[in-house]
Length: 293
Image (cartoon, rainbow, N blue to C red; front, side):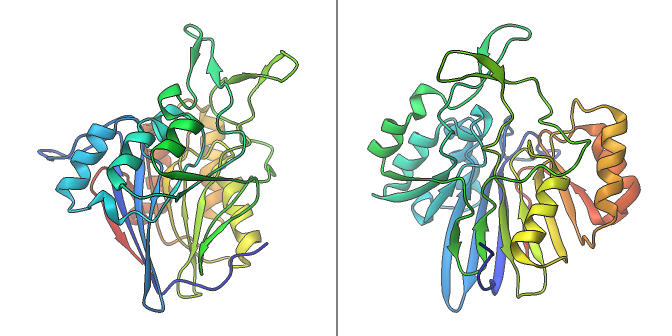
């Protein structure tokens, strides 16, 4: 499946991110949340990508940005982690709609945990269970495949792992149906791709556990478009060795990219390398930013 059609315009607002600027009225929190306002032939859809981990902080920032929760037409969850999904049920209640599409991977509700420094579940919390989501007005669209939201806007579905230097970025585990503890490869890691004016794509990531270079390759294969207007989101290089960071930035430099705005789990060293390579085409991500394509 490839992306069908293109958008006339896309606006991306950073509703939540780890950092806020000096004297900012916004509340920072570990996690990300984006509002995508997509326009095509007089039709507008407002899509919420992730909800970070505090509905109180997210709703506070939305109020400051003049975003009424009732405008949300769909929610996309990029992966299971609590800093992208916690508070979803409360956000759905604030939206106040029935049968609101909530798009995610079929494995999103699995047990996902770390054992260092101690055993701790880091996936979707019980307060945002399947039942709570549905009670709060959400209708789950759980798919491994790309899913079109509207003409020119779609999810990537499962991202094919093609590089030999990218990895999940954190030692995560899960338990199989037959009770075995195994490494969690984060196959649910999903991004969002928008085709803007049929002239380039914008890629929105949550944490890029699939690897940002893999995500770029996958997005180009999905759309058939090599021109990248922007990559916005987390790249999960915060604990990556320097060698992997350098290989990632070098691989990205080979693509025709107008803008990279990365934060959250990207890490300072990776941000420095991106700035050294991309110059003013790189911007650190922070709460309250707005992009128009």
